Length: 336
Image (cartoon, rainbow, N blue to C red):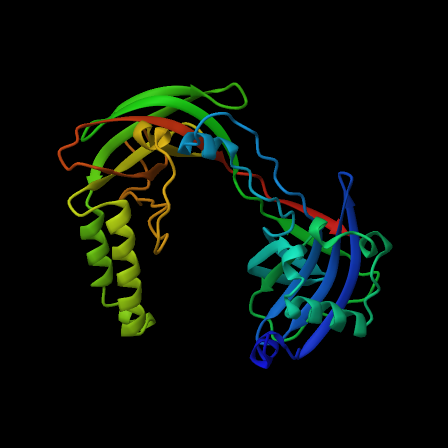
């Protein structure tokens, strides 16, 4: 510990607003703490925190097992897109969430709670004796405001939720052929038959594409030469580990009779054991953007990358449509 750490965490607010409203829904409680204004405006919500349960599976872990076990921590208010205080609309532009147990030495969070209490916040009884391991703090950044909204205790707050897409496992075997199209059906979680058309399968030279990205003159308008060189080094280090020079990734362009985002993996990847990689994670979730908005079957055209290295003479890829994402509907709630 030294004073530079204290100096780093210390924040002097331009303004602070206590809201202090508890929301009860589906047997759980959430608390809108309030807002602060410094260089930017932030809104804070305390939520319950529950560690995701992992299924115990026998045998050596491979990527298939890890992907099936995947169950992220749920932050109910992290993905809210708008808060309305009376007639004043506040747009969010991102946020963070995490267990308060990691804040025991985060003096910035502790300062926030002290400053909220000094500004009039009364800690709700249900929070007082709840261990910090069972709570999380969601911090939302509010876009383009220079002063905090006017607020009084009986003012209704309308919140617009924009949830993440819903993940559905499928594990459907699909053989992909480079340069060729194919169609197939699968049954979705509602029991409906979904028609999928793979319009094209291509080999992607990621080294060539990465080099082209760093030659783009627009980068120099946004970043210093030092930042560009550092990013280049991280990217090349990552590629050396993930896709050695001369190897390719697989690009897939597809149409789907429902508005779903499909995720393909190679069988080789799913059966392999996880490896530790260093460097940038830029290439972990690559996507391709098709040139056309609509495919040959008149449906929205989408792209996906299988980021497993393949030889440039590959013609056939044993793969799986491992999972798909279904868009979740936007909804609103009013807090009185």
